[in-house]
Amino acid sequence: MHRYNSLCDDFFVNMNLSTEMELPTNRETILHFFERVQKTYPTMRNFYCRDKGDFVLEEDKDGGNYRWCTVENHRICSWQVNPDEVEDAMGQHRLVLELAPYLLSVSPLDCEALDLLFGFDFAYRGNHNQLVSEALGVGPALERFTEMPGATVINHEPSLTLALDEDCRTQCRVSVETRTNAYQVRTGEYPEDPLSVYVTARQYGSLPPDTTYLETLDRLLGICFDLVDNMVIENVLEPLARTISLK
Image (cartoon, rainbow, N blue to C red; front, side, top):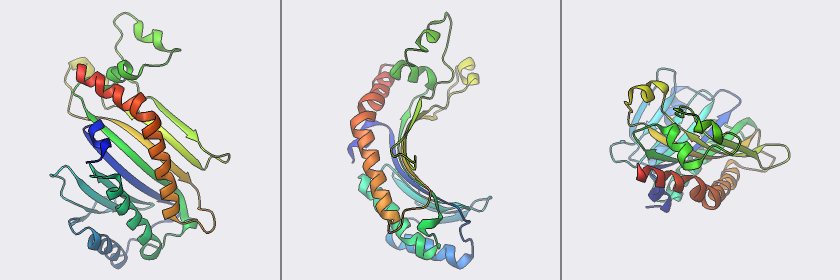
């Protein structure tokens, strides 16, 4: 098990390639692409088409560790939940990016954005927003708002996006997504929805000449590792885990 899995209840690694042009949808092309993915990952045997026309190939989800891949109108997605190692998920993502130019006619020129996301889910049945404010704070400028008599935090999803180059094509983002609404706070009835932390590295626009999707993905992987290891674990994940354990 990768050390990231011990930091949360569920850890996942997702890759999304968004395209400017529509992706092919004809039967032969789609089946050929997914058959090639399945050849490498034979346990991905559940294939179906969603109502809006997205094609999906996935593993059974009852084991807690599973893969899936989708081809949408303008997006190719490759995901793995609870990989034993990050490299297990990256192998799947690299395969998809290797196949896409040849089987789906996706040129590096056609790139609208390439994302790599590390996700961390925490199980917490309660007010996610209040928990986040206690664990991470709300910033000095707004801290006194939480001290108002009878106040309850019902919306607090801190997020920060940075550009890593002068033309803002390479960006990274750390964000927290809560899933608690005012009705749940009012009634005290909270579902088992996860509290999520997302660490995303993104490359915008067509790739430079002589640059491949695989090279770009590996560069985004380095950014994600740097963010998680040097900032997010100590300042976000561990405070959330400690605060949940005290509830």
